[in-house]
Length: 164
Image (cartoon, rainbow, N blue to C red; front, side, top):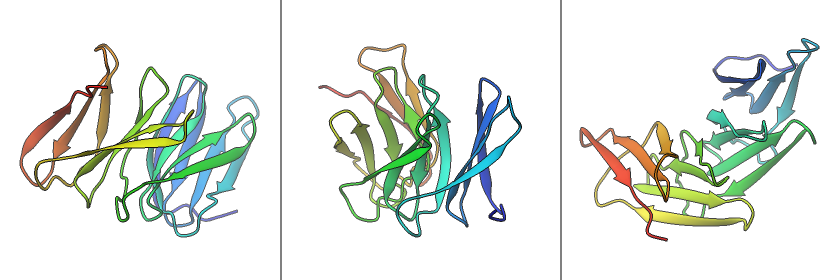
């Protein structure tokens, strides 16, 4: 069993998911049994961090060093990862919208990434200036959904309204 040094936790229906940044695992604690399980990320040196749980009870996470978005499905006990199209995107956080698409922001390339997991397709939105995105938020009350992030380098808030 790996030693947990740095974690980020989210709960859903009393089960717990967490990311193990240094040992590169996704952790899952089943509330009914109390059993803790650890699942190694498929790609090496991924540094999973920050995450959310979708309506299907799947845990989504950002693979900071792995340049990926990942999803753990507790039904299959499998992790699926999607490689970001631009190298060194370094996803930091992730949000999943009402359509099942996953959103993240790049810490290094000043892009917002949107993943359609059904099509295995990314859409990238280039931002007009240096941003260093950390936390991500999707507003599902709008049509289409709206993506919000803070600009760590510009002391501002970024609102993305996709036109497609």
